[in-house]
Image (cartoon, rainbow, N blue to C red; front, side, top):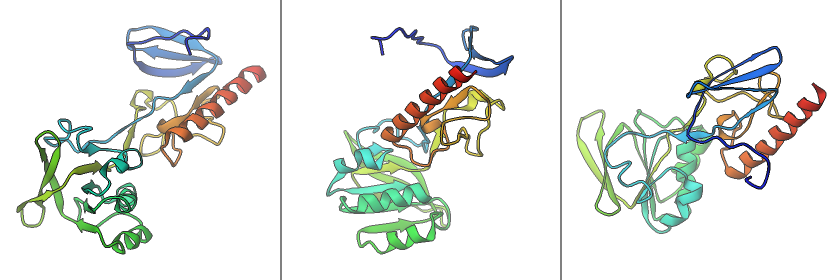
Length: 238
């Protein structure tokens, strides 16, 4: 990108956005205001963390968040998936094909995933589901060696020996700074149409900060190209 005539600003964050008289005003945390006729929001999303001891300590040392990216690193090993929603169960199904065993830990009394996914998970011989499981700590020395959890029903502390932990409790889009200006769904994702348009003319969005279903790099790249073309089309027509 440095080969092109593009201004790059680092060390600043966007704090607000509004549009008046066909001009989009982007307020930064240093007090500056950028004015533009079109804008593409591509702030991405971050994995939700469970916030227990060991999670940060063993990041990339057995703690992972992307089963598609890091799953092959755990071939033939014992792993746990934290989260019993669709993303967690889908991850467990994928991992079961390459890992020795997969243990799903769900905080509630039952899995929340779609029934067809639960049926598929239960049909696999190397998967185990533990409900009422409140994760307390991810343990290890140089790498993850186990996970400690408390049973919500009995308050009994338990331990599972394993080599990896996949945290699958969802994503948080980096869109809090938008407030009520750009329409978002209940999860905070920016609502866009197939061309990347938001509810504000001239403001587009792409990638994991939007309500696109699949959060993958190649899909985000495509949506970024779509948003760029849409912004170009908007400028030549307005």
